[in-house]
Length: 62
Image (cartoon, rainbow, N blue to C red; front, side):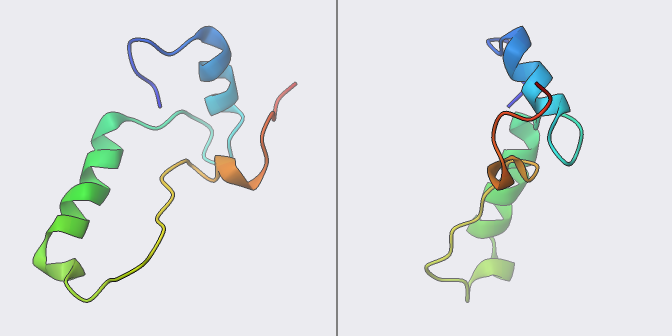
């Protein structure tokens, strides 16, 4: 996530994700708001990864 405490290396790794950038706290917040809302009332037992597809492969862009 691109936060004030993100290192240069973390930002470079974010740029190497399939989406081409680090995520933001707002993007995570939107997922949380959706899950807390009525539209997600029938969702149970799911893992939702908010990482710009970074979990597909670590250490890109070396």
